Length: 268
Image 1 (cartoon, rainbow, N blue to C red):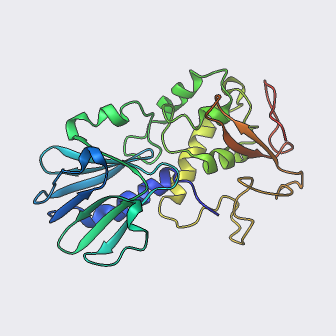
Image 2: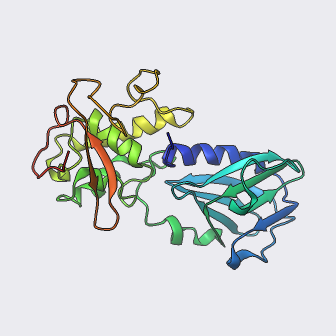
């Protein structure tokens, strides 16, 4: 199964890039036209932080390497001089110290002044894995989209940052809410937001995502990409596309465990 990068994945990636922190770059290689001549060598890496699905690698001189993993991107860390495990043509940026090399593959990369980071991430809602997580602000932002399906509102990073398709599906199941339910009809929105925080916290240091408590293959998640009956009640899992036109994403739910409240459901 292919995991789409979500908040926990991005957090783990930031921790992987900690191998650069405190070290001087001996070279940088940006493989995007707009940054082809950029040279960050002799600058010390200060830190890498995650913000929702964004990564901010700050270096000396008030510069930040901003990357976004998109659907399939990622960073890999190697010993300096080691052979890459992925094709060279997929690399977009390589940052090298005396002993380590971090390579970003198939991702979005740009360079901004550290003081201008808000231009890239300032629109995001509270970060579920951030030090400044604010549950009340996340609830307030969600409540502003009263008539929007909760499954759509949860993916809107302007409301709260870090939820992707996996956690959207699992969170709605654990909350007993059909993803098509309007935000205003969700019975306990504060509890749902708290569950989201707990889910990502529980997985930020884990390799595998397990929401059922059952580690056996095919039983680790309640509904995401599940074919067949619900693990809890045996009802066939339903599937539909949900989201604004042109931005629809697949969603799965159990029609029995997740009753629709206050709106029209999707197609099973």
